[in-house]
Amino acid sequence: ESEKDGGNQIANRLYQYTWNGKSLINEKIIHEFPPSPRASHVGGVMAKDVQDEIYLVIGDMASSNDNLDGPTQNSNKHTLRDTGIILKVVKDGSILTPSESENPIENYYAIGIRNSFGIAIDPITGKMWNTENGPWEFDEINLVNPKFNSGWERIMGIATETQIEKLPKFENFVYSNPEFSWQKTIAPTALVFFESGQFLENRNNLLVADCI
Image 1 (cartoon, rainbow, N blue to C red):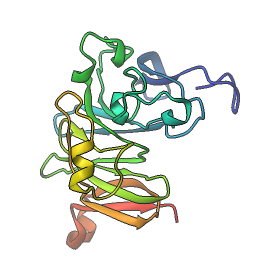
Image 2 (tube, helix red, strand yellow):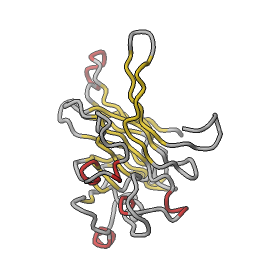
Image 3 (cartoon, helix red, strand yellow):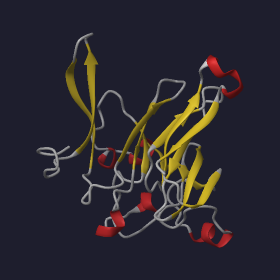
């Protein structure tokens, strides 16, 4: 959010509205996150699971370029910030800034996310999947279980045992290798489970969009 299109940043926010059949009304800020100094790796994609819980991905906002990378980027350089995470949205707006809440960790579904443009929920298993873009190689598709650590900024792609051993321990988050990774970048973006009955042979398949 900025003062004007292309202007100075104000904040990075999640809003809730009511649709009255004609327009959006009853604007309410649900969450507020730190702005991205470089306006990059912001994320913003949301998904709803089979229990109607809502999840939001926030990228690392290129934190390491400004020495702002912290525990959720597997770094000890800075204090906890709401970056590089998949957040379980507090729908009633009672927690505006998750990192400043009484127990921030309970709001984080996953950490170690560099830059993601896609989240999808498997309609059969209820499992979460996401796409993640690497810096110049090893883009990923991940199966995201609760308390998942995607490894950034120490790991992208399939990790060695040494890399996993050296990964900083943060609370009860656990690293898991991607289910699929491209050595040469393709920039995966949207992620969706195809549920249409028009193409039964592809029903419930996971489809990935890329921008190349």
